[in-house]
Image (cartoon, rainbow, N blue to C red; front, side, top):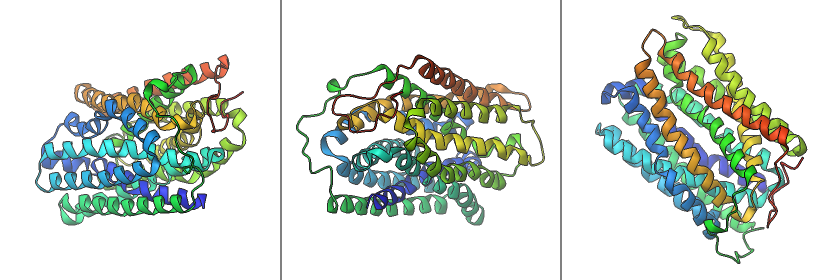
Length: 415
């Protein structure tokens, strides 16, 4: 039955992942139809994260107090409503309406992830590497599908309406998957029958050094992955000579690699938990190497298929992020305050998700020359490099300790 919960959680996140990356797949058409600069386009992603800088902690506390099921229902519904708002914004060429819809979508998406992680952690604490890896990476195949399908639908219809409508349809199907997930969890209840005896508050949460450093590492790696892929179609079009359509197809390689390798990486992470600090170092180094490849590959006017190797490395990196870094971070906090901890993590993650796209847009605008995208990748190299340094510090200093009070998660970081 745990496998069914994971399957439904994956289906629940499909609509989220597909709709999130629609602007990335249609970057050039959106910029042309709305007459946007690179910075204005990137604001569609920054505004996704800005509200969560303050709201994610509140969402985490709500989930800890009211339960994961309530969170899954409420925020999967809100996700669909926000995509409806984005759809109307695209139909009527209303940029402000699309920004508002993306902001609401960001709130719903962030807290929905917290609710899903809360439910899964209660059911399968000893297999978090595998479960988290699958839930975070397999829905990325929907993002890969988006890179193929959204440009195709736009090319056939010469309109943003149909690509946005299909994203709305997937969000509705994901909402139905969320309802089924809640039903199955209630029917085969194991953990949530235990009543919460103490009201959860942010003041009850102890901010430990392992949690803080792991939060920074995971944030830096996410910031070197998501904002880069948000502009990946344009990156491959301008730097490596692919057409917009072909660039969208090539970018899917990273998503597919992450989805295929995450079950393997997750199993290894769950089985050899005492080596997880070493795996953390390897994960951060892989992010750095992937951007090193992107940076040093030459500018070309004809398709450079060797650039696919950088995407393969990036896909493996995200697989490690999902199956190693996230479970390792969760093992540093008590289970009954997991959602609150993820809410705190969300503050710094969403700050980076809001700031990094704006910085990259600014660097692109002032970069000049014939290869401005190369300057943008310096940002991601810098972020990944800091993560490498911090992960090596954790390994060398041996300061990681598992959460003690009320912790039901495995001692994943205990070495």
